[in-house]
Amino acid sequence: MSGHSKWATIKRAKAKTDAARGKVFTKIIRELTTAAKVGGPDPSGNPRLRLVIDKAKAANMPNDNIKRAIDRAAGPDAAVMEEITYEGYGPAGVAILIECMTDNKNRTLGDVRTVFSKVGGNLGSAGCVSYIFKRLGTISFDKSKVDADTLSMEAIDAGAEDIKLDDSSIEVITSQEKFEQIRDSLKLKGYEPENAEVTMIPSTTVALSGDDARKAMNLVEKLEELDDVQAVHSNFDIPDELMK
Image (cartoon, rainbow, N blue to C red; front, side, top):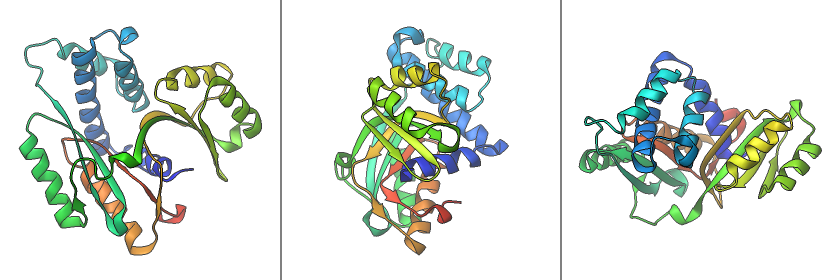
């Protein structure tokens, strides 16, 4: 499984604690309200909102919370949130892409800069690493629960761009536009994914080990803990035994 997917698996496990779940819910609520404000409250006509609703359900967010977050978009107390992306470098020059949602850019920039300064790394200029990443769909399956060859053929027939396999998993890569269609097509055929999301995928990766690997994971974790940060992407590739 690619580095970003291994990292996503670790984050989902950590998010099971009450404190972590609360922070995840706060970030998802912000995404729901912003998506509804930008594209309208009807998910049938708002693909972005549909994806965030799926994300909320995957995090076990109650339906009432989801509805309130969407309804808030039309209310007078809905904060004007701006979406900003920051870019930088971590240990061994790994690329770091930070997606934020904020009502105060100066505060957010200061918080991000402080983490880079304290943990290690450098905040870069716009465009310094974003060219490495592309927004794609990823649909991951437990290899022990499916027939890898059959699933791969079904996914390619449905329009998948790539299939990645390792000892324990199968990862179907799709375009952003075809993500929902391919995911739903595979579900209808009886394949239940362990994880399905649209995320930023790097075109190249940097293999890390030892202290560099631990420092890179710590940098990403500290950035993700910031209230205004919605997602952090990197192109590190770290051995499974270190990602625990």
